Image 1 (cartoon, one colour):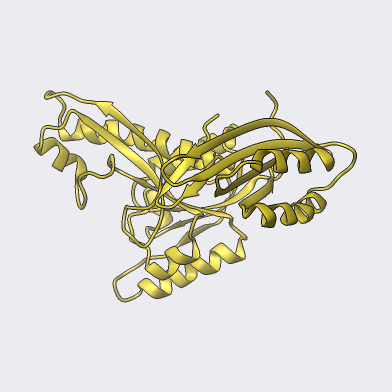
Image 2 (cartoon, rainbow, N blue to C red):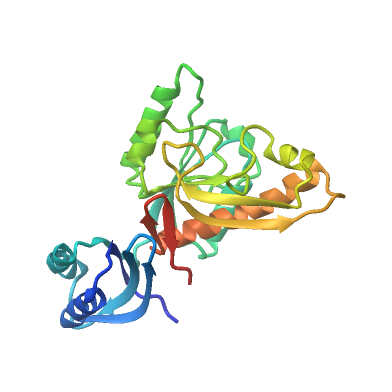
Length: 286
């Protein structure tokens, strides 16, 4: 099925008439609904939906969005309505390990991820990425120490604003963002964690897992919040291992999991398939 140009997502307190009110408005204003997904969370009493639609009759997104505000107010919706004909602008942060960065760049080049990378930011110099083709994207080396953390993060925030980036991806960026920066990036900063959360925290998680004789390893992609590694989870995956696997085997297998989990999480966000539900996410997978 061809992708629709526009996507509406919303959440609200569940009550009769929500779908009828939204679909009627879209119909009356030239909206042709091509895909609709919904979820009724019985635990919280909230309703979530994702509606992909096209416009007929020469309508514009600006006009339909403006009128929809009245409908949203009446139904008390928290909502977004985005144009998917324009790729989202994405700033990528990376540290020493480049496997997630390389994977995202490859998926972007082949059209799997419909995004527009705006820049690459690293706390390591560009010499660390000698084998990476940045495709003429700007590269910013922003080293960081305990004493320069605030200045470095101020520069990151300047780049977010200057490049008009709509999403920030921490592609194995091994620095903890401050509470101030995470607040500014709330709901639009995705991190890949090298563990199946909750799990082994701190240094060398795969070595910790090996010492405990685990039989599964995994990775977790989540939104960044002030609570370290406890933001709303978007995507996870695991892989079975055995007693014969060494720590190096776990690291190798872990890299593969991290790549695919982060790529899926970024794609879900770009396609407006993720709706926040408190400390959790509702993810309308394709």
